[in-house]
Image (cartoon, rainbow, N blue to C red; front, side):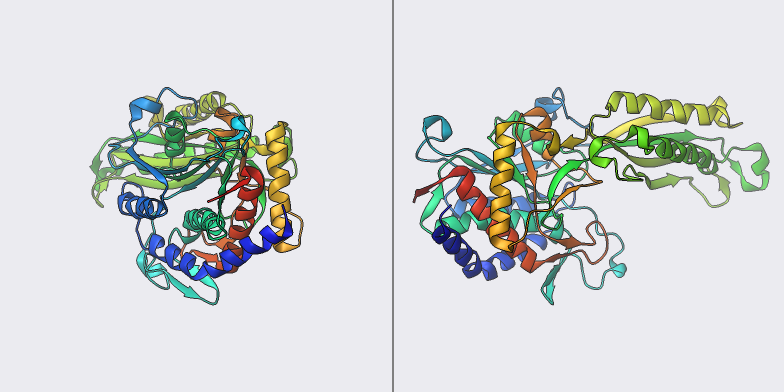
Length: 435
């Protein structure tokens, strides 16, 4: 790419950066927790329409995706799960017609719950900018990434250019619990030569990510008055040995001989989390029921079916060792993430190599430093493109802190750099044509 174009793109990002921060603030103000994303998606669809993109907004139908690899089971209604895709069609017709390569710019609009409001320094959905950071739930994870994707495209427009290949700007739901939003985009026919997902991993290229499995364990007890607790069975207390057994399994899975190459250096990459527990009906009654929710990580290449079989065996073995549970074995219900791990590092295709080289060059042009690589202990929607669509998925986004925590914040100068690098990457990967 010519130095003149690099300079023009950077200047365009700088000129539009105040608007970008204002956009991010407005988007962050939408409390788009699961099931409540519609207003944020409406805002996004309006912004894409105003820019002249072809906008596709649809409600996800489980019937369209439940048979596909990568689908995660859901509990409860699925109304209001709405995706938005804005499409730019290259005049040259894309790579097959001698134009540029196509690209998916993917980001998720859903955010995790804010938790107790009194534990935030300021309301989580009233974003504020302090000392170069934007605070607010979802500002980092990952509405800043959606902003960088959109304003990188704006920078090309400001230079009188458009991508020389087809570009699909995706704003999806369900990333935080299933990934079914990204899967629904694949089912709808959105495919490209590469995907870029600006998740907030501090301007590093994610070379590998873990898989994630969610499940619930349901226990049933015998209710009785607490005065006669010896004759009843406490379902909450019965959960304790099962949780201990699961943590012992977690320790085994993290052993050196089980780690994939990308995580050979990691002593404890796989984390088991008891994320929620409910049980009982009355303080003076021995609880008759208990449900606890579990999240467990998986290495790339680790079989989900084999993992589920071992989890079930561990729980049932522990239950049979308990005087109460052996007569009332737990039920295990899978819901949410059925996510396989994904390693970009294992993609030896020409497209993967070319995309990484283009991103490395863009990052170096903006920062003057080499692009660092990282294997992360979380999951992203990259797996859908890399595992099920033969599409290299590059995860590269701004620096953020306290994501999923209190006082979540994103570094605005990091966002500026990522936006510049993304604009250069689009211009290099897709080529350009005059507007």
